[in-house]
Image (cartoon, rainbow, N blue to C red; front, side, top):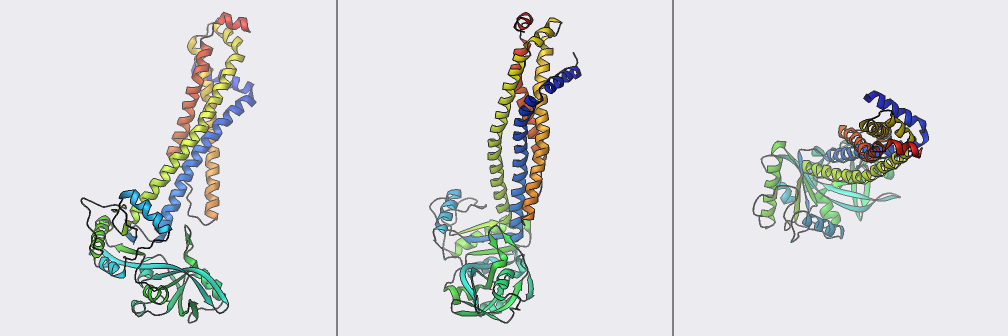
Length: 429
């Protein structure tokens, strides 16, 4: 018996009981569609995170931020530091002198340093609690933010503690409405600040809304509002991106010298610094790689969960095929009586099982791609940088899973059918 005649017989048998075949296929459709959706969502989340990081600056930047020292090292130190920061512990050792020392490195061309605070900002009868960012004057040169009208402060204004402010477009609308805010004064605590500029609309990165921020010169915010002398973070832009890791390591060396910290033995490149450091240096490339690793791990976890639904679908195929063999015992006996061989019966039921899973796989892929597109469309409509991507490997995995389960769960019923004694099979009939 040829393979084509075997497939034809299998298709006829499947059409004989459409409802049962449809329900069996449905189990595989759900599992395969889930595989496609998980892969596509993983790529979409990854593109969202990478896009958000890139919108913050670029891959030619490295960031320095405060970190709570710890006796631990590596990821354990990072975890402990994060927990301490959430609890309100605030290291005060990072300062503008550190920023300027790193700025002197041969591969550094620009940068900015800053600190953030939350304050009630008011104009006449309008008041709102918003994020206030203190930045050096070079912020507007390095960051993606752009002036819509007015201007940003100068370095001289920063160093002279000028009480000037630049507004995000949303806070400008909340406080001033249709009025031109340039030259007018807003109030923060007991001090008045003259508005000198408004930034172009930029949107939010994760939960950080750039359009709802009041920007002040960093020294002004430090001295006239918060009464401090430290900063929380610094960004530095390199000339040669290929040397960014070496430059970040030079920055670590400078900061340890400035803060009277011991230099660790051996190489310490990478996002995880030693536990005793009161700072953390990371390149944007490293940050993106970490995010890609995290999203990859989440995708694998979800795939493991999806695999359970595929196994359930496979068990459904096993049960259905076992019932089919029982129902068609007489047919099997008759075929064997007229000369059908072991391989013919084995092939018929095995092909029937594989066809069910392949059909379920193809339909599942189509539905999975469709749902993935709808998810991407909805996320994009919500303003998220979510790319519609269905990786080629998702198709390979989906069809591979469907074929594997078709063979694995169809093998036992097929062997049971092929081993039936024709006389006993006809007697049962």
